[in-house]
Length: 525
Image 1 (tube, rainbow, N blue to C red):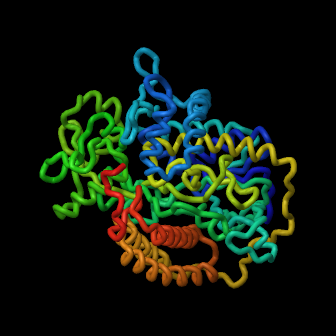
Image 2: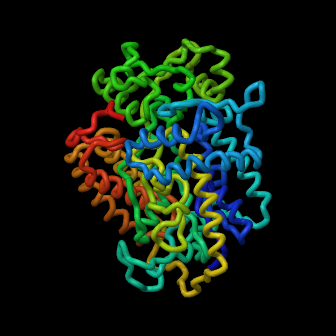
Image 3: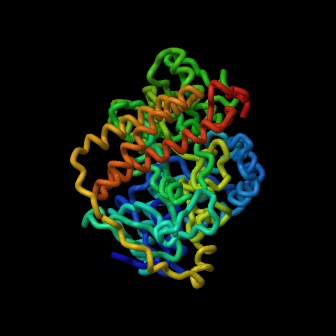
């Protein structure tokens, strides 16, 4: 079965939906999401979206904060572009109806988070991503030029490989013609032919045992582009959020936003010490890579399962007003954050690497764009500055929509792409073959390729992953398409890529810290 569309958007977070709305002015848009529209990482973004909005803040300060947090590995031209375009993209969201919080005088209530030198975070209470996602979904559903395909899973992007050509990595002239997409409800695979294909598939958090990401964050886009011989970069830089609620029996981990530390909360070890001052002069407001390694060190020194986040010295009514979601959720776990310390632990949170793209979101595969967390734009460098991800997504969605829209009239569909071949495949006989492999993968990545790494750990991880890869590929080839087998396959691909990049990085920088190359001290940035 074949379908044709001008723009095929894979993913329904802030990047994909913003692109869809803007691209709809140029042609027909099909949004494919493997769950429901609202199921995305965007929904779980508590803190906010960063932009220079008023004095004494200015572009140079935001640029400097971003580059310092990124350990100097950021692309400065990209940083300047995103920071300078951010206010206009914020205004786009406001025009759509996103209800950012205001003060009594009508001005926006700007917050401050770790690594930021000024108050520049626009937010809606402590559920900014949910407010943005809800607004975008409402507009997308009202748009007659946008088709929505929920419960549809993208399996592979279509290139000349599917026409019988041999494509090698770094080959020139690779083109994308759409994607094979599994209709999970009707259990059939659709050949989507498109003029432009957009990867907006989000993050990779579920490659680790503990993550703040929803269960859908399985690195699908990065894996698909990698298999299509697209260029991937900076995958060693996996950001662990310093503060998720410690609850080993719950997945995903509940995020305790960095904005709470910006509001005045303080990290303490189990002895009650404000330990962060020993690691960085900025204390609990240091960039995330510094904070997360400090927490990891404290936990290992004392043999503890978590540290504390202390809000008890802050105004109780202010906490309830600014952080109602956190207050309510913690109460369900028997924690009153106005009186009790919050047990917190680092969790996999954000991938700073991904599909390498230019300033318009286009990767090395022609007609294929990548925006949002799936992409590597050069903005984040070795560590993402808090609340820079949402603004990156809308800036690149805007640029990609207008850039690809201008090209659309010159593009044709590749009708020779064959339909999906079901030959030789059967229903998976035992689900344990997937669930056990997933547990093994997550254990390998968490124990060997987590916050602190070493050459020996990475070598062991690679050897063990090779076995999982071979087993899973054989299983995939003989099984009918299912969401779980595809996700496992993608996660193993992503794990391999992370290990590959980590092994090649012969220094400790930003989010990549190896005990074999501790040349850059934790407190240096």
